[in-house]
Image 1 (tube, rainbow, N blue to C red):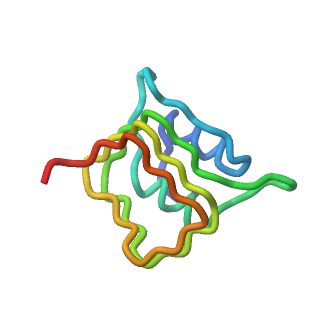
Image 2: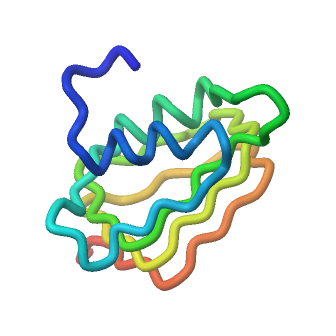
Length: 108
């Protein structure tokens, strides 16, 4: 990934993503994940041989705007019990699968 140094939480997500494994940050000391890290993974969708990449994330605190306006997201996305400091934008995006469960959006 070309983003400067990853946090421990971000590194866990980057390692799990190519296999489609779930990363549960509920109760973790470091729950903060930058939206641009998630966006980078979703747009390039790295995979491992014989595996299906997916973003499966629980309990994260996402900073920055997760802006996927008009993007093509070729892997499943599941965000559960996550909070976002800025709006999540999927307007016009094509997604293979999208599940947003019990997310907390910023106040309007």
